[in-house]
Structure formats: structure tokens, C-alpha cells
Image (cartoon, rainbow, N blue to C red):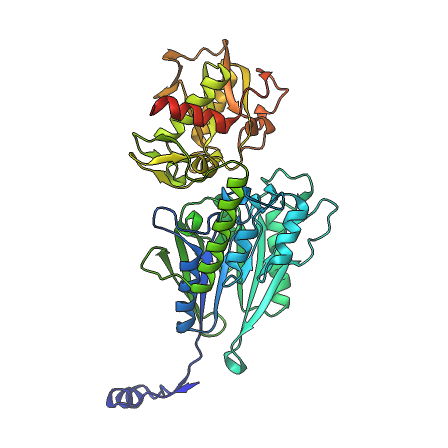
Amino acid sequence: MRKCIGSWVIWLTVLLLGTTLCAQEKAVRINLLQLNDVYEMAPISGQGGLARVASLKKDLQKETPFTFAFLAGDLVSPSGIGLAKIDGERIAGRQMIESMNPFLDYMTFGNHEFDIKQDQLLARINESRFTWVSSNVFHKDGSRFDKVLPNVVFQVGSGEDQVRIGIFSLTINSAGADWVTYNMDLQAVAREQVDILKQKKADIIIALTHLAYPQDVDLAETIPEIDLIMGGHEHQNMQLFRGLDFTPVFKADANARTAYIHRLTWGGPGKLKISSQLRVIDSSLPDDVETARVVKKWLDIATDSFRKEGIEIGARIAVAKDDLDGREATIRNEPSRLTEILAMGMVDISGAEAAFFNGGSIRIDDQIMAGQSVSEYDILRILPFGGDVSLLEMEGSLLSRALNQGLANRGKGGYLQWANITHNKDEWQINGKPLEETRKYKIAVTSFLLTGKEEGLEYLKPPGPGLRVIKENAGDIRKALSERLKKEFPQ
């Protein structure tokens, strides 16, 4: 559009400088709404809720029709509700897809998309009204997933104000499914995708990623053509600017507690402005009616399903006398009363001297406050993966190595929580006595840790030096938690 500004100040400037301020102005405004790592449809402790997110998108569409919602991975698993059944089959993320369909536009794979079976994931993709994008994830035979695109270019505006937005996507290779494979030469894949998007005349290039943040930082520092990285995986909001062009890297909080709003203004080549806002999703946002109806439908289905399995949503196990903090911002960074109780339950059920587990085993992302009942459904919310407790014999040197790595994993799912273990400055103690490097200890761990798939703890996969499995199935982890809760909080 042509904009001419007339005033005596401008005319004076024209006279003095011999220039004209009648200028060609082109500005296309685009809103991007970013979510990542969303496992729950309904609010948790007053925050989150997909019906509120849908309402927020409608508000943003009032600012500009060029408004798009993105999810940077992790949607279909895990959650307590995802364990519910219809006709004998787990719903396995159906509730999340249907809740997202009213407002989501683009999504990439997170590592937890591969928790469910292959046919279930393919069904979820087919049920989606939004577009899946993945540049580095393939079937085991190397073929691409049907209806999953390696990149996308879409156009907003028209004529001289036309803007072409290009998207590519990368996912971390931390899933355990044997039917999926990854190209983890991330720099090469990203370079290839950026070149393709440039050939497709993309004006703005966006990386939608589900990577560890150091990997996102590497992309920002080495591929300056990327204008914006919208990421996930860490579960905690972060805002980084890296590389010569200070490429922005953003991640929101898990479970839609927050969302990032990116307001882009395109004024032509080299004239892209990005203004980003972290928005708390709370009761200040009304529920979108359509999405709220879908959420209620699936909550009702889950309640009925669990009842048929003999699980009463409200059946009380104990009344908490302390706050049980399962928020991911807590359990991935420090112990809580909940993690202590779970680890002690593992000791009880296995007969071990001490126990440790990865904080990512707990998925409730919520607090059960003192005075509140702990229900059977809460156990499912806390431990949707379930699994066994395993009893190991570990040499002190290996135990020390694992515990140190657990501290190094602070902020991630691999941060270790423990019982009968203390850390004082540089010294580890087991049951109040200094850890002996050459002594063999009986240690309870979650069965997941024996897969060797936790970050930095690959050596816990048996057989390995300093490690012997005494009993692989020493008890059910949900039972361990339930029984310890009853012991801690007798009724």
C-alpha cells in the first residue's frame, strides 16, 4: 500500500533534505501460537486446558486472519486418560487428536508419539485434521509416514503483500519403538530442508523441533537462514537467542500451562520483525464451546471405562498429610514429598537397601495438596507408564556414576529421584554411611532404566560391568506407590 504523510514538519524536511517521505510501505502481520508437550485436555491446578487455547486462537484471529497454531511434539502419550479403553482397546491418544482438531494447524513428532503401537499412531495421524510435518523420522525401512510431510510452504496475503512461510521439523531419537528410525545428522537434514524451502521461494523459514535445547542452539548457531525455532521436549518455558543473527529459540511449559504467541511483521526481504509473548493459560481465557464439548466427551468415556475395569476415579487410597508435588518443574530439578514416597515404596516392595528412578516416570504435572484425597485415578495420573520395579546388585563405583549422572540430568526426565540415598557436597551416602566404591549394594530401580534409553545412563542396560539383575520383576511400581501412601498416611 502507498502511505504519504503530510505535515509542515515533513514539508520542511523535504525542503531541507531534498527528499520525499512518500514511501512504499508493505507490512503483513502473522500470528503463530506455539504449544509443546501437551498430555492433558483439561486444566491442571487451574492452568492449561485445550478449550482455553482454542479460545485464545480465536482472539488472535481477530488481530489478523493469518493466525496459525503449532505443536512442537508430544501429544498422544502419556496420560491417565489415554489408558482408558473402548471396545477393549486403549484410546491411545484419540482424545488428544479430537481435542486439538478444532484449532491446531501443524504438528511434529515428539518422542512420546512412539509410546503407542504403530497401528495406533497411524490411526491418530489419519484422524487429524491438522498437518503433520517431520523431516528426519521414518519407518524402519526408511520410508516416510503416510500423510506426514518432510516440509511445508504456505502462502499468506496476496499480490505485493504475499508472504511464503516454510516449515521443516526435527525430532530427538529417544523413543524406544523398534518400528521407527531417525536421521540424526541434524545439521545435514536442516541444511537440506532449508535449501529446499529456499527453492520453493519461502520468505520466512521456521524450524518446528522436538529436540534437547543444546541441539536447537546448534541449529541457531550454524544455520542463520532459520528465522525462528519453535521447540519442545524440556517441558519448561525458555527463550534463547543464538547465532550471528540472534535466531530466537522458544519453548513453552508442558500441558499448555503457557503458550507462546509470536507476532510476525513482514515488510519485505530482510524486514522481518518477531515479537514474542509467553501467555499463561488460565481462567482469564473462556472455554471455546466446541473444544470444551469434546473434552467433556472423553472425560466421560474415561470415567466409564475405568469403572468397568474396577477402577473408581474417586476411590480413596489415602488422605495426604503433606503436599505431594508432581509438577515437572519440581520433579525434574529436585526431590519432593511425592518422589520420596514413591522411591520408599520401591524399597519396600523389593527389599532393596536403596532405590532410584528417573523423574520422567511421574507425569501428573500437578500437586495433590495436604488434606486432599489420593485416589486410584491419581495413581494412574502419576504413573501412566506403569512398569515393574527391578532389584539389582550394583558395585559402589557404578552406583556413584549413575547418581552423578542423575544430578547432571537436572531439568530433564533423566534427573534421578531416590530413597535412602543422600548427597552432601561431593559425598554420596547410602543409609547414612559413605558410599564404598568396591562394595556391592542391593538397589531398586524402575524397569525402564534397564533399557539403557535414559540420557547418560545407557550403561544400566544389563549385562554390564558392576551390574547384576537379582530380580527383574520385584513388584509393580503403581502398587509400590499405593502401599507406601497407605503406610505414610494411615486412615
